[in-house]
Image (tube, rainbow, N blue to C red):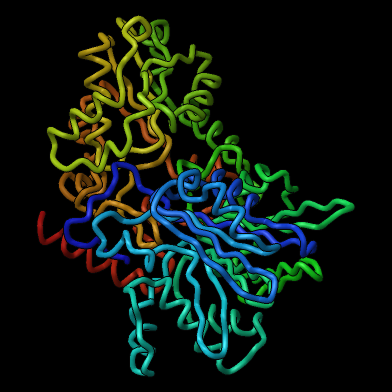
Length: 507
Ligand code: SF4
């Protein structure tokens, strides 16, 4: 799960792996499955390969339905009406294409676990970095695994711990002490309780909400607050790093902070790219953070002092993810914002096409410069991140050659990405990251070399200090590992060292 498998292609942009959503209602005559549908639709951006739901039907039986495809295709009306119950959880999955068996329902979630003693269903976003070690120990205890996923290892671990106690908070507390990973997890028991748990460093977002009326009370747990808004709920708060929250359809919400650490490691990429702008994560509005990222770039941009460029400049986003940051930049720079690139919304999966030529064609299919807007102009081009650099190079060349832009000035809201992510994000290797590779090759001059390779007239990246300032958190609250190479998880530190030595031996 952590290292890419042979033949596996990574998308141009890093990709968040999953979304989770759960609902519980005190009215036994009310079905929550349509709310699961709407919550999962709102979280579709976090995973598009498969969708699944588990519903607790009257009598304490859990029924799970999961299939490859988008939420709207998988959870059709007839499924929604068939899966009827007052407690349920759901999951959207992004599969690492090429991973063996990824189309099998065994690899989809929720993961339904049942043995003679216990039954539960679990949905999970993240990765368990020490899952190999846990699996080895459980293999020795005679456990049989059907997949090679950390999801199953986690479910089996929970199942094993449950042999010793029936107290769910205790089971989850003991589980969390054995895990080294980045995870947000929801678990539905056959008694009708939902437990939500976030890892002690809080890499992945998770929040809770409610909707109370005279007829019934509903409680929600979601990867992002936009899902709670979508189902008409009121956002209550984030689940704290290291906290277990119990949502009970009979009692209310109870919580316990099981592991407290002196730092957290919320993924900075959630604010830069992954999360929906209308979400609030750990108290920070994603839209506002992106606006400030753009403003910070403009504050430090030397080209804004060049009057010739200023008078001829327009601020153009790379659609769609560069928009908020471009608005922030244009506002701070007091320059016009313009849509200079047309995006074809019907071209999907552009960036998993193998081969350089196919990739070039795919970019042209997906993006087209609007000549009447960009011709003769100094384009200040705003993108959220530069990962491999190949697509960015294509866009710069399209603007200049097809659009007739006079100059292209690339501004990037994420600082240079020099190291891979091992925390459950589908990410290129260090060798594939343009900033990681060029830093090894050219040392201090690596940014000049990136600019030459991309072909922009100027290049400016956000600094890490400006990034943390825009998010409104300090370095001890965020994961910045892909920007610094400093990993917080012990099991990941070893992997990072291994990859570093492989890259060094190649350069
Ligand atoms: S390494 Fe980067 S992408 Fe991965 S969790 Fe940390 S900040 Fe997020």
